[in-house]
Length: 183
Image 1 (cartoon, one colour):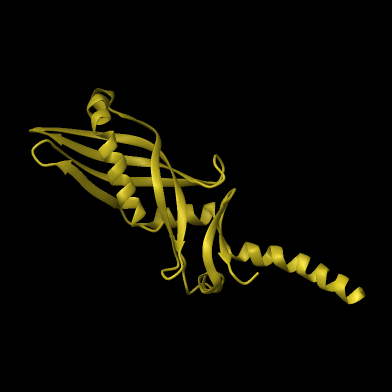
Image 2 (cartoon, one colour):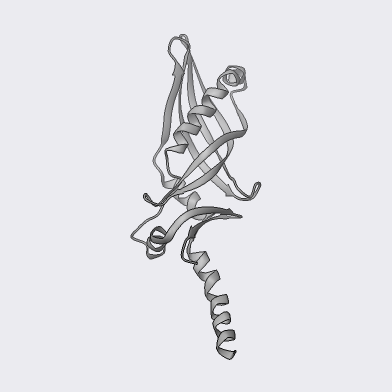
C-alpha cells in the first residue's frame, strides 16, 4: 500500500510537467509569427478589380474567447485597383480559427477561418472594401490554411520530444497542447 501511494505521488508530480512539455504557449506562437517573413497575396477578378495585400503584426489569443478556437489580430495593408483607380488602405482584422497539428511536418496549421471584426482607413475607401470583403475573407483563409502558425524546431530538445510523440492538438487558455498517445 505504501508503494502504491508513492507511485501515485510521483505520477501526480510528473504528469503535469510532462503535459506542460507538450504545449506551445501563446507567447511562443506570437514570437514565431513576428519573425516570419512577409505574408502576402493577390486576389481579384480579371477586368473588375485586383487587391494586393500583406498581413503583418499578427498576434494570437488562444482559447480566451472560445475554448476550441484561436483568435488572431493583425494588420492587412493593401492596394485595391478598380479600373484605372488605385486605393491604398489598411484593415485591422480579427479572425478566429481552429488549429490543427500535422504530425508529419511538426507544424500547427489553421482551418475554418472566419473574420470576426474589421475596420480600416482611409474611411473614404471602406464602402468599396465592404463589397470585396467576402473575397478578402476567402483569400486570407486560403493563404493562412497553407501557412503554419508554428513549426517545431527539432534542434530544441523539448520541441523534438513534442514532434516525436504528438498526435493531435487541444486548445487551452493561453496555449496549444499537443496530445501524445503515450499517457
